[in-house]
Image 1 (tube, one colour):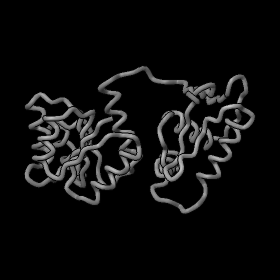
Image 2 (cartoon, helix red, strand yellow):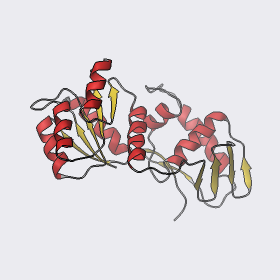
Image 3 (cartoon, helix red, strand yellow):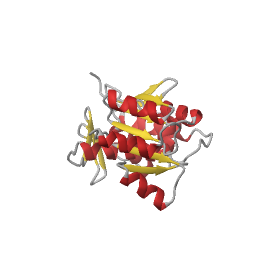
Image 4 (cartoon, helix red, strand yellow):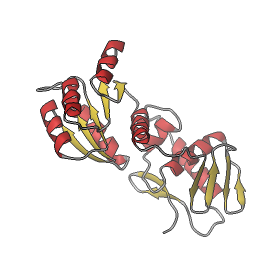
Length: 225
């Protein structure tokens, strides 16, 4: 996705932009509402993440101006203003979703995906496939070729997350938040242990490995081209 981030807190902006780029997105950023509006009207974006309290032009005014210009880019408000009235104002101004700070990065990614699904509806997947590896989300069965694979619940969640992001680098932070629901780094080798076990189950005995370690970045599941 091509994403615009409008956030005046530079530390918060840096964290958000870096996380989105790690997740494989193309990101532009703006430090005030006027620049954010100008970028929104001059470049195509799949989604915009907008803070409510911005210098020069606040987030509500920015989105109202966008809608008056006929711009339908989905907007996710990201704000410390968490009262019901604040959320209602954001949605009435033309926002499509509203997430309060502090937030879990995994939830933000999930909300962005949901916004894109609303814009481009698609059939709900009940089966994931990468190469000859298949994962049935209804029966929770896994197999590679004709070989059934017995997965523990956590291994199933880990494999499902990797397969949903096939071909993309998945970072440790993404796995901790999405699979373990940790919003901090426990400073343990829990991810390495589970990746090792999963690799032994889905790759051992097969000619081509599917689960790869991307040095200094994270992990990726992909089939050989």
